[in-house]
Length: 516
Ligand code: B12
Ligand code: SF4
Image 1 (cartoon, rainbow, N blue to C red):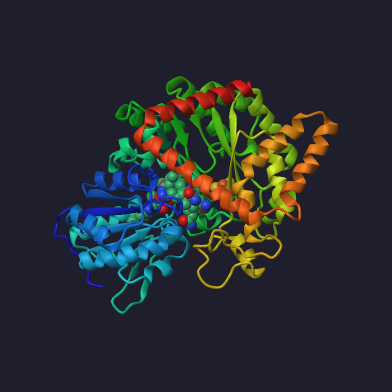
Image 2 (image 1 turned 30 degrees about the vertical axis):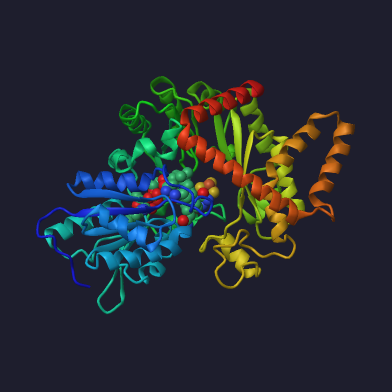
């Protein structure tokens, strides 16, 4: 590989962010998500004097559109692609088109898919280098060395494609424990005021890295494996630094009225969490939400959360079948534990959103029904049912593969990736589609006097698992409805954001009143 030499000039870097999923790949034309990773890389590179810009792809681009947008951006020395697993197929095309427009540009790829399967990404035509794991400082060193005309093929955490086609694997840089070392992210990298979240006066905030749990469906176990000192993989900015982060953000964007903490598990370190929420209550106090684990929670903390401004929380319930949670997901939370914590949230008027997985290996409709029922028992206010996606390299992918549930060929585009005889596709789609509908009905059943509630529960069971349920037709009907609802939501967010925020406030207010 011919080394790039900028002869003392600082590097010009373009970060490409394919920010869409199957659901919105064709429709989204404005908005998009914030990415802490890219904002953080940009902050570090800019601190080093380099020039950074973003190509924010909000929808699937045709060759012509992509090339045009690239040309419009101007000239760059390095183009970096941020690649989530499901974005990898599209990125391969974008990289090919990039090299057609700018053959001399240096192409580097980073993010989760590159960390999981770096050689697969490096093998793609046009890719010069892959970053494994955290990217700020390897990128900075790459830019610095390129700028100084030095050999950069020994930079830690980077894998290079050499002239003879071989791959040079450098060791992965050890993690540093102190996240405060990283500057406050460069929010300006984005068209921040027009992000999807900003339009509804919300900021997506991430003040941590990683997670120390080992859920089998999640990539975290593999993301941390790459580091020589993986024990410190889960890290938070200090509470003081996290407050500084928020103050910096709010000073730049004073219209922000809600904070959405997207850290993997916000209360992962209970002492950190308690200290942070005390400071947050005094210094920020905006309504907020975050992802909370129940097995490390106390009633005292829930009470403090309410005072801090938590109006709602998210939690991964994943499966209502305790055996599935323990045996296949490695989430050691009993039903009783989940119900007890949930009662605290009701007591203090904080609404709950649960994440659930449908179509897990060895699941069937009866086990999926248990997930609906546990949601009803804890009176979840909102539920998000996700269809299981087997991420390569995760233990649950291996389990699914070994059991023969992963079909040959490309399964990434299938609505239900696993093919399981005991849980056919139409049943998985049915549970996903009517999840909240049935959660509501079972909530009614549990609120009724026992005798009547029991009869109603049995009747509902029959409507979910009965022999003659027309699953396919019901899914078809729901697809039409969901399409119309999504269009309406996008329309409101894009054209009447104030009305959307108002409606959301009314909804949360009503929920909080109901819960109190
Ligand atoms: C916050 C978050 C979100 C936020 C922000 C998304 C974003 N793009 O940052 C929101 C809520 C929008 C989101 C949405 C989704 N997410 Co998400 N999300 C997370 C979460 C919890 C933390 C990510 C984070 O901010 N980490 C901190 C930052 C600093 O690290 P980072 O993003 O990894 O970036 C570093 C490196 O990856 C690298 N890097 C990143 N990009 C690049 C580019 C270059 C050129 C280089 C060199 C390096 C580099 O350097 C960065 C700095 O060190 C992770 C789980 C986790 N525990 O990590 C899941 C995770 C990233 N999400 C995931 C998924 C699947 C999704 C969705 C597809 C879900 C869905 N079905 O809608 C969407 C995709 C939307 C999108 N456009 O990306 C998966 C990705 C799995 C995979 N194998 O790709 C994860 C890992 C969770 C999981 N299931 O395991 N998510
Ligand atoms: S707790 Fe969440 S982020 Fe952590 S391993 Fe489990 S699913 Fe992944």
